[in-house]
Image 1 (spheres, rainbow, N blue to C red):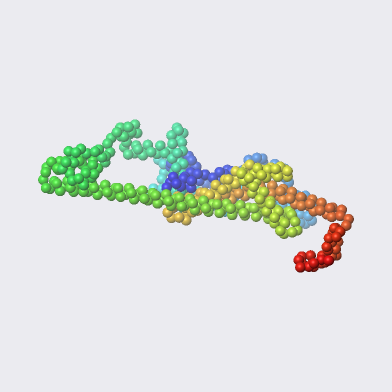
Image 2: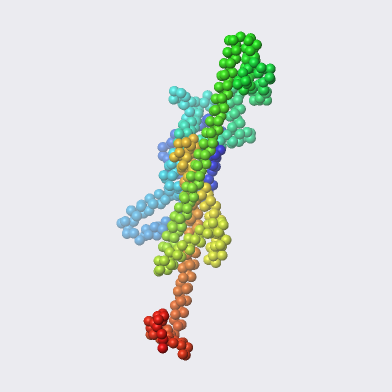
Length: 487
């Protein structure tokens, strides 16, 4: 089942532009020692929470970007100038405090999103406690030990798939000596069992406790009921020796004991066979459930992508309609809006882009290859979100739940699709303006053509011009009366 769901939470990640944060640092992987944070110093709050600008001094930036309201100070009446100046200074102070946080908002989202992400990390830096609740102090350093156990316990309940993913990634993470953490943990556990890692080959050569002794000889089966031969063949060497010794005694009690041993072994073999068949059937059932699950995911994904594309094109058309008017005729306007949507859809398709390349070249628009990658990444994140959301709602797959990754996939899909549409919008507007300009040229040409016509044909006077001499003329109303005989 884990292999079937490797695409959901088996370590697969969604391509990102760098705004996703790892839920846990990949350091030593075990209990670490931490130096307690110093107590806050009175009056130093601003120094702790205000982000430091990495580029230039704040005063230099203020000097380079003067406030536009500075020029209006002199126009304020003198008795109100102090109040206006005070408000202006307060405005500058607030802008200075917020300047360093703009980058965080652009990278990680709105405050609600940042709060949700921080909540996911709660418990990562907890102090380790003993069974009675006392903080564990490392005897070597005298400092409290730090543990991630509370965070892991919460994630096991809220998002077990994330814990599996972290365990897999940590197991394969390399240490400084090139050994994986998984191998390190394994050999530590191996030694804790009292085994010597240097004697692995010796351990491998030792006989197992339950190993069949091979095919029994005809002499061994001579005094055993034919219906119990298979049961006897599944016994170990030691068990066969016991049965043979009972047979040699040749007493009624021993014969009953032999039959009882072989009957029990026969039941064990039959039960093992039944369990094996049952497990195989369960595996087939699980495989069928997984196959049905992914069919449902793929169907929902296709519907979701179609809906997202339709909504994106509708949004583009709405933006264009506020800036470009194709025609006063609603039908013509709708047709030409659809033309823009069709061209944009073809442009975003790698298979159909060649058809619109000449149009883009004529209007001076360039297709950004990043658009295609953004849309592909958005689709991948959308599919992962749909799969994880269906896992959340299906109790059969509860072990694969990963609510944290599901929320991240939703945000990634929306963010990348919006970024792609922001790059597409200027091209769509260029196409729309080119079509609207062509409409205006056609209208102007038609008007000039009409002005050049000096006469109009007479319509509705009942006469028929250019009739050959001698050909009968039909009066009005008799043109298609086949019973009428012209004179």
